[in-house]
Image (cartoon, rainbow, N blue to C red):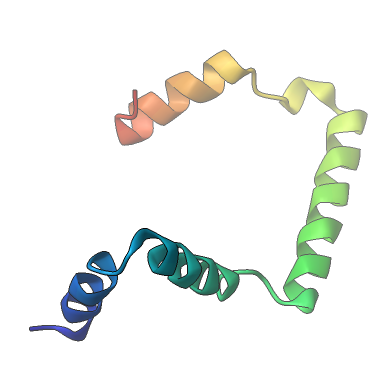
Length: 75
């Protein structure tokens, strides 16, 4: 049995509280490092400024929904 499948089987058989604690620990490992956070914030600021300078590049929520549906088949 692959390691992932074995780990999943073990974790899913844990009591709810222990599964929650494990999930929190696992999610914590997915957080970006400080350097990554700085880069994310810098990019967000850059995009915000770009949008302020050219509001016509914005996409409406309806257009975004349509694009996601077309691209991924999401409903």
